[in-house]
Amino acid sequence: MSITSKAELLGMQKVGEAVGTTLKKMRDYARPGMTTQELDNFGRSILDGFGAKSAPKLTYGFPGHTCISINHEVAHGIPSEKKIMKEGDLINIDVSAELNGYWGDNGGSFVLGRDIHHHKALVDGSRKILLHAIRRIRGGVRIADIGRYIETEARRSGFRVIRNLVGHGIGRSLHEDPKEIPCYHDRFNLKRFKTNSVIAIETFISTNATYAYEQGDGWTLMTRDGSFVAQHEHTVLITKKEPIILTSSNEI
Image (cartoon, rainbow, N blue to C red; front, side, top):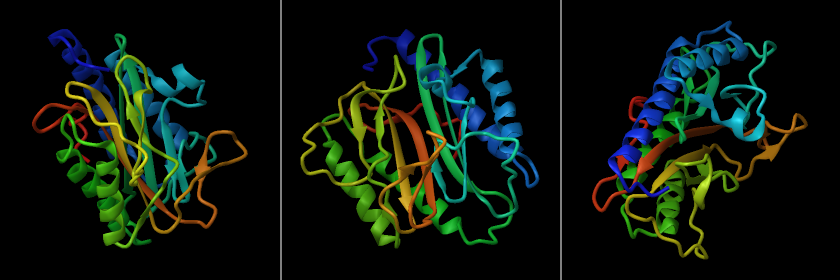
């Protein structure tokens, strides 16, 4: 989506606030012994308060209002009464929603309680790399250069990136052009970021694996070697100068 009016900017700011606030409150609400279904129900109540609707449910019929992935689950984890969160778990929550015709996307991984399994370095790396990558985005910058930066910084920290999960354009629908904003350097991608466009950019930083694979439930993605992955994502408005994070109500 390209922002062409104050009304469009306001619409994107409102949906950004809705998903950012929902993610922040879900993260604060999560506790050991809670099921992911209970956490998802709480997230739905926050979205409802904004008048927002779950994007994965609207777009794909996802069996939940938010995606909640635990430990070896990389993304698209289905909320369930059978999944009980424990102290030290690596949790990822991905919240995307539609509000008044505008769409926003926000995600973040965190350690639940004490870092007894030593996931904090992975989580912090994913978060910092995303924020530093965002600061480098301007209209005219090559998408491949941002991917190269993310991959280089991940390797410098002793990690790798998941190559088949990517960021994307967003605004009037959940996925728009550019269809792919990779976490790695794709030398064949000659596209550039456009001023006034909106993107959902994310980092999938892995302890070892470089690909995630769909499981038998048709949704959940996992690595084959048991790697852990931390994801962070923001919806961002690109300008000629420093970009504007529209989901900044979630201070990842």
